[in-house]
Image 1 (cartoon, rainbow, N blue to C red):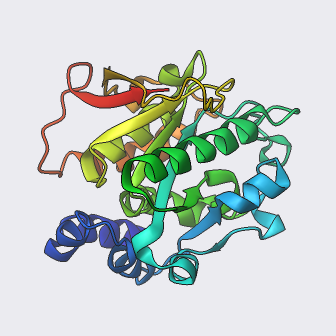
Image 2 (image 1 turned 30 degrees about the vertical axis):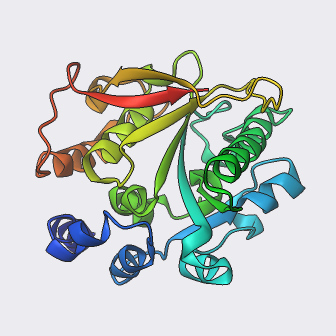
Length: 259
């Protein structure tokens, strides 16, 4: 495991990694990450979530290999959104945990966001996009989290865009502080998009969202269901300190568009 952490740190400082990170085509970046001795990056297509109307477990195998998925449609019309969210039914026993409510409010909000994003791109740029999501519950093997956690900074960087599904205590949670931090430090996106569980795409009142500045907060001061999570988070936070961007917790902000 120490070797994996070492490889992750080296890759984040690699000149090719920085060069590929500023391009819309995420495949060169994903290839670099896949070459690390760890799980390959996986994604779930928006049409799958629309069909299921729920967020599936990794065991159900509804995700696709990231490179194969992008190649299916062509990188020029694909967008990849990292989904940052607070699990709605957390349990210490991971087999009993679920990220969504029993009536699938989060899945419905993501599906509504898909409609919004496709409409926005079609209106502004006059072409149709294919949207993939990276959602931890389905894109990480839930039985092998140890192998996946060191790769989180790289997977965030491989996503072109960042979607925050904010609940009342989103900014209090350690993992929900970590993911925006990683996005700010390593991701292509210069802004985040914020939705809530009741988000609906309205054609009558269509808009691009309210621009706000949101603070980057220290994940180590955040709350977690499992106290061991802070031990898992600490080495990832340390990786961000090697980044070229200066980050001052509680003062540094990132631009967000709140829908």
